[in-house]
Image (cartoon, rainbow, N blue to C red; front, side):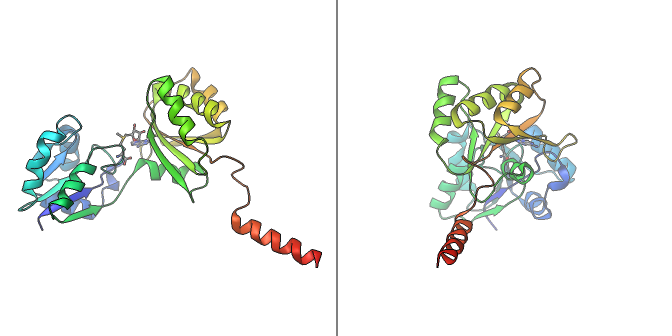
Length: 244
Ligand code: SAM
């Protein structure tokens, strides 16, 4: 049916493209892509050819109205280079405007580096805050870290190898020396998760910036093993029983 289809694609392992994602891509009238070379590789992998049109931060304003118009008569698929569109990637304005124009909006969920990293880190997942990329400049970075320091949630950040050690040191400085995990090359050949305190991880990577794509996961403030509210209630009830 005509409309907008948000299609998640693999973050490394092409086997992670879902059958439903492949079906939608095969039938799309046009695929809005970040980089046509990247998406062409994915389409080759599933043995299809579909028209592609670039949609990225630099041309989005200009091409959005045309894409919205096409949704009246065609299935328009949106993909990013890797993972879930809209997550540190373009797309939310396309969804907003498609909805405002009354078009069908459908999501085909799948790989997302942030969620995959949470599953590898071994840190609490009941509450998490997706921080995305921190600002590259030290001052703005420190301010962004200060803003989330008091939040009782696991933090998830995207980062690049060359900046990793500086970011870990800035996190230790702004958050205290919390437990953390550096996850890397998820779903690829050299997938790994290295855990430790922020300062130990900063030291580990200071002289050896890792290659590949990275997600940093940081424990919430306080002891990650600390009793939950439910545990606290139970303990209180027990204490009261002993008193009576
Ligand atoms: N939309 C994507 C998603 O759903 O995860 C994220 C796009 S963002 C522009 C790219 C960043 O995601 C990378 O710099 C890295 O931090 C993270 N990332 C993407 N693929 C990854 C992978 N296979 N392993 C670890 N991190 C990855």
